[in-house]
Image 1 (tube, rainbow, N blue to C red):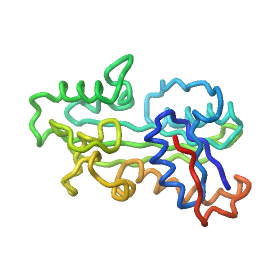
Image 2: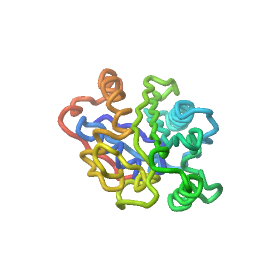
Image 3: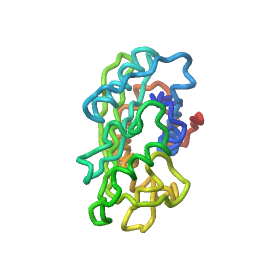
Image 4: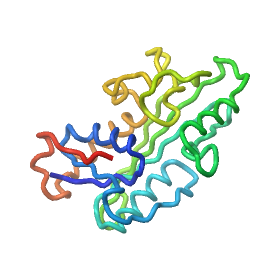
Amino acid sequence: MPEIILASRNRKKTREVAEILIPHGFTVIPVTECGDVPEVEEDGLTFAENAAKKAVQTALFLRRWVIGEDSGLIVDALGGAPGIYSARYSGPGATDEKNNEKLLQELHGVPAEKRGAGYLCSVALADPEGRVQIACEGTCRGRILTESEGIGGFGYDPYFLIPEYHQTFGRLSSVVKHRISHRARAFSRFLPLLLQIRHRFGDSSAVENGGNSVPG
């Protein structure tokens, strides 16, 4: 069964990625289950740079195939903020709650028609020698609400409204989210390329027959 390490310590993100790759027979192993792996400093200037750095540095340390992923929220009225700082928007000790609180403060008084925003996800795959083999991005547009709706997802999801569904990512089912989200769209580009090189992972006989994931 082909195994890929996901260079993420976010359990909910790991679960989303695993759910996307499971039907194609790939086992997704969170980096937290790989021993004492050093955290990668996310000092890139773009999502793509951070995703590639996570993949490369983790691959070199573990000598395994590794997916690096970086994603975040880009708000029009804030000039693209929080952007690559989405996970640490509220500063040291940032949490989803603190980040959302700061986001709402920054958008205070901004009318609904000017609260447009987009999620962006960048994904990179590095081989055991630390060479990037695949790099893809996906985006999803929406609008930031003034109050949260739903308890699903993570990050800014309860405030991110998808107009065509009249629901936030916090309320949308995983079935729908895995079709329209920024992460889903990035992986829809990533997956065909991954399947083209699956033979390089060793045992690929079960790729089309379903797989397993390690909960992250």
